Amino acid sequence: MTDIPLGPEPAEHRRFARYLAALETVAEPDEAELVGAVLGDEDSVMAQSAVVRHVDRRAAELLTDARFPAWCRTVSRVVAGRDVLTRRLREWTLLRALALGEPWTPAELTAASDWCQRTAVTGTFPVSPAALTLLAEQGRTRRVRIAATRHPRPAG
Image 1 (cartoon, rainbow, N blue to C red):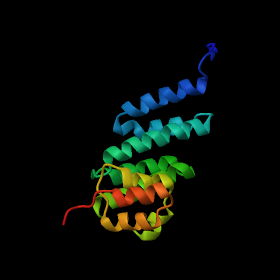
Image 2: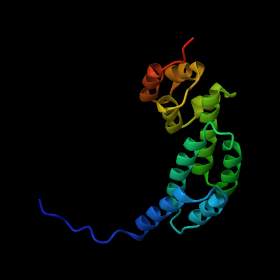
Image 3: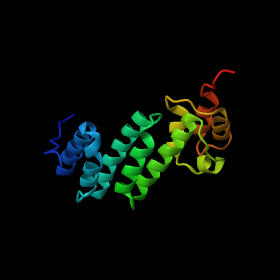
Image 4: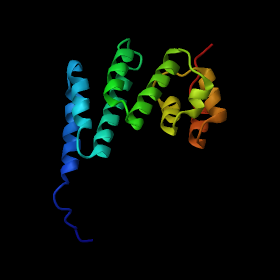
């Protein structure tokens, strides 16, 4: 097979990598400003993709931390009007409720995206038996329903 030269890496790929690196190392007081700057990129799809990755990483880090609600409010203000990002933050809030045993509704969980349901049943955090039962019966995909039946339940 002949190697086909791919040419130089597209500019948006380089910016994406730079954004990810900057978001990974940003100090908490500067995070909202940097997220806003990234979202100002001319390639809105690429920018939102970088921010989604950042939100996923930070939300997972802060999921059971008392700082999560304040962080989520701050980021929510910056991403307001961007449906993909606001939904992701809303779903991380639902995952937090599941992890901490806080109130949630069956309608919220069954209406959640495939990503959210999959994260609930494959994540490294505890999920209430009621949520697992609901997802085993009404999960959006077969993969979620099977994973929910196999997810470890708390003892007792």
